[in-house]
Length: 222
Image 1 (spheres, rainbow, N blue to C red):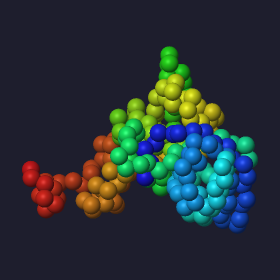
Image 2: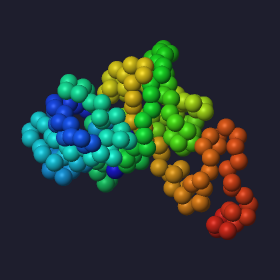
Image 3: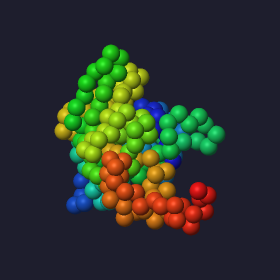
Image 4: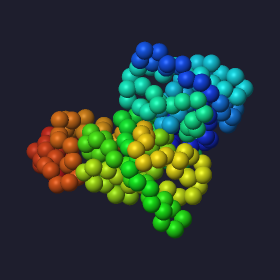
């Protein structure tokens, strides 16, 4: 489990691609200070298992499913990536609950500066946008961010100078892929209430399928 507070920017040292999987080696410092083989490290928001660790590097096996779901397949030697160690129980929770199991990718479509912050617009599929709400949380390449606005095609976040300097987000160009993990709370609620077949785009005015009878049958007093 992670919080979306990026600890450092690492560098891709090598990428060995198989037919549908990959073995990637990264250089890092802080995230390796107390790491052991088998530990989880989030790379651009993707939870990876460190299978080989040295003082300044670690290697991870990236399975086919991760390659399909994420942008890790686009990584090349020299790329910088966001890194975070798994959270410690009892530590400060600066971001939100991030599992490192991303929902898919989005595309950076615009960046616009407004005084000390930069507005970043990301387009995404309806399967992702259905879980993104204004003033809610979203993880973009492993960065915990607050959603400023949502449409039926994209969403926007505002990036402060500290986040800009500590992460790779503002180095992205229009058209580049980013990994997206939606807040898991909404997905659990949808599943438990049996709403998983609900059509995308509910926040635009569609019917949610939630009725007084359904709420009462699930223990909610109305």
